Amino acid sequence: MRLWLPSFLVFVSVGLSCFAHAEDDKQPADKPYVITPAAQPSPIGVGKPCEYQLTIAPKAPWALKTSTPLKVALRPSDGLKLAKATLSAADVVDPKPEAKTLRTDCEVVKGGTQAVSADLSFFLCTDQICQRYIDKANLQMQVP
Image (tube, rainbow, N blue to C red; front, side, top):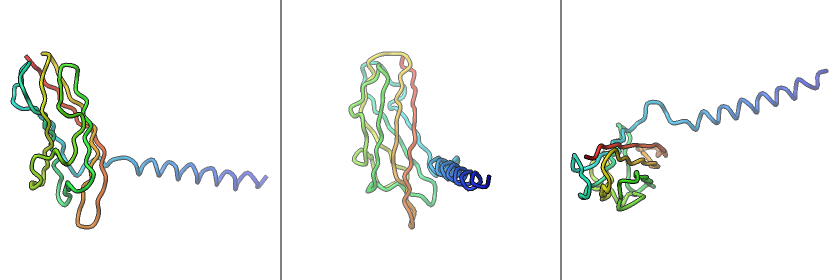
């Protein structure tokens, strides 16, 4: 009769440790950065050149270093062509400001609602630690 108690305790402790690990993988609700996607010029037009920009602005005391891995995978809608499908630290416009802007050329080939979805992976650092962040950003634009 007492054999089930140790088995039950092992089962519960393993279950709780798995639950605690899953909680550690979640991103914090109050992110230490702001992501802003944009398209220039505004408004953009069919057949005209444009550029897609994505700015990552860390909040103090965090900093986005261009020496750490930085990857942005882009998925445009059918009516939009991007010069690059993946952006990296090499695509940062100016590495000096705290907020880093990545860019690529684009062209709208069809009017209507166009969109770009971005999957981001980057590191923010303080004087003591670096932490990896994974996030998404979406940009929708109306093209006449």
